[in-house]
Amino acid sequence: MTALRPEAAAAPPSSGTPARAASPPVPAARVRVTGPVRSPGSVRRAGPVVTELRLSAFASHRGATFPLGPVTFFTGPGGSGKSSVLRAYEALARLGGGESLDEVFPDPVGCVPEGAAADAQGRRGFRIGCTTDGPAGPVRLDVAVQAEPTLRIVGERLTGGGETLLATALRDPGRSTVQAAWHTAGTVPVTRAPLPDDRLGTALLPLRVAGRTAGQLQVLAAAEQTVVALRSVFPCEPQPSRMRAPVPAGDDRLRRGCRNLAAVLGRTHTGCARRHARLVAVAHAGCAGPVTALGVERTADGRLRATVGRDAGRTTPLDRLGDSELRYLAHALVLLVGPGVLAVDAAGEVPSALQTLTVLADGFDRDLDGRQVRGLLDLAVAVAAAGHIGLVGTVTERGAAGARETAGVRVVDLER
Image 1 (cartoon, rainbow, N blue to C red):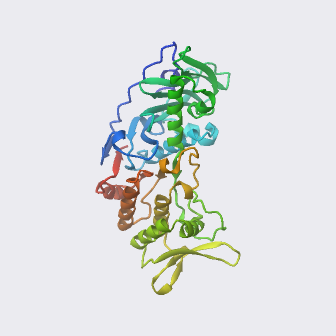
Image 2: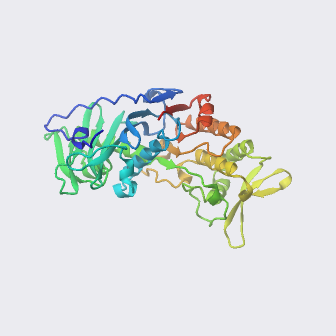
Image 3: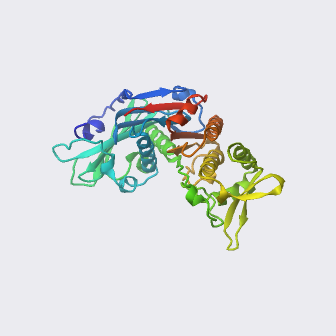
């Protein structure tokens, strides 16, 4: 990539006849996928889900396509771009949730592939995308972002059913808008209007498309599927150093760093007895010494401290556990509780029985021993089989070895 070419990546239809969808890019030669590789339709999920990530030009990745299963791990040597994959996924999720570009990309130049030269207008940028699957069938979203000289979306394309459903392109650099065109298939085949250049157009379509024609309904179905799939993401980065202190009561939706683990344990103990009992069993399998209960106690100032029940009624404060045990418990809790107990803005318009959640876990096996990794892998596969929770993470080669031996886990090997 010598320069950002947004017009070629995502240009609106130039006539009343909708453009045909582009064929998917060829997977990068430096990627090897092991584990189950199924078509999206053969994996039964409760609701819309992301089935593929495309990093056409992002950080160290060029022309990379990554298939995603219910449980997928990326591995490879340092500098191979494992964390960049999850960073791109989270960026798409946040854009799908309505956040602005400057919120999602505080350092946009760091996302530009190293060595990418600017074009004649001094522009450089990056391109990312995904495919979702759900009631609308496979739907592709591709986004071209200009990082220099100013941060803006310069091209976006949403395709499904062989049609280009939305396409945007920067026509006037002096304006903070892009020209958008979406499929109508009525008396006017294509509707054109400006959209802001700092937001994902797909996320704005439900507010702009009337839904009066079959074409408009197709656009709305594809956009809503994409937004719901992207919003249903929870990045999990347990920070043991912040998980040991007592926490305020009432802060019981688990946060990204899991620092309020004690309050969440209190909530699951009283409100999710079945899942809490399962969590205790998982804790017993992965923590040192017997674990008969997980509970909370109030400190003198009214805060909550988590405790681990032992034999003969003894308890151990959670803050005495090692980093590996705390990270193990945090991951297990996330996999067991679901959207209602996590600090994630789940789509309220989707019934709970049809909601899905994808957990993003960078460094999933960090600090964990072999027994703990195996326990979490088995748990992830088991909960993913129910169709409501999936997992995409990065692991070391040691963790990848165990993942390759676990049925139902897909491993993507990256090379420098």
